[in-house]
Length: 87
Image (tube, rainbow, N blue to C red; front, side, top):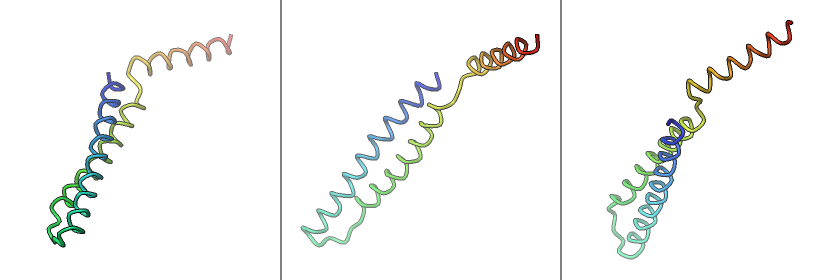
């Protein structure tokens, strides 16, 4: 379940990052065309980019995390290997 949530969060963060780059580009294009000093689009783009990077990091950690069942299986396997070596 964690891996699925991690993948979904990673995809959402990627889309948010793409949209934020689009906003920053639109801000620069508007500034170049109208000599407008309002940086609202650029501020929104930078904010979304930061949020996208944070969500991307969280998504990667969730994707890489192991479930309790998987940890228990690895522990049992290592115990079996240890018991087999000591026989």
